[in-house]
Image (cartoon, rainbow, N blue to C red; front, side, top):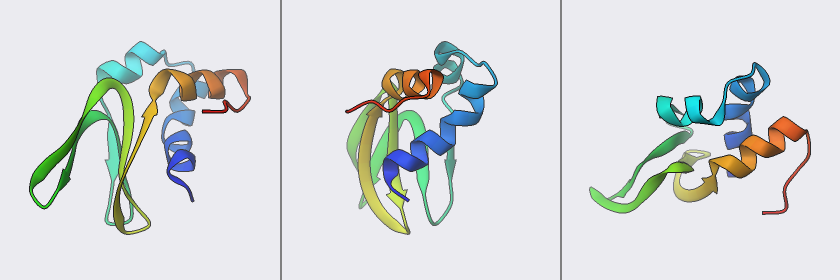
Length: 90
């Protein structure tokens, strides 16, 4: 699974049930375990040092396939992609 796939999988149930982007951003949710970590906004840490402070409208993946990483996505783009049922290029 790619980081982008993880983010889509994370927000798709909320988008398809009709949640607004605003409600998703206001909730500032996230999911994580030893295998992966994905969240709206927040911080990315490495060796107890903050390496990135995500904006409120960003979704970050900081762990994937049991490895630390940093992938940043604009929530609006992926929300629209799911809503329209098509993929965006970026």
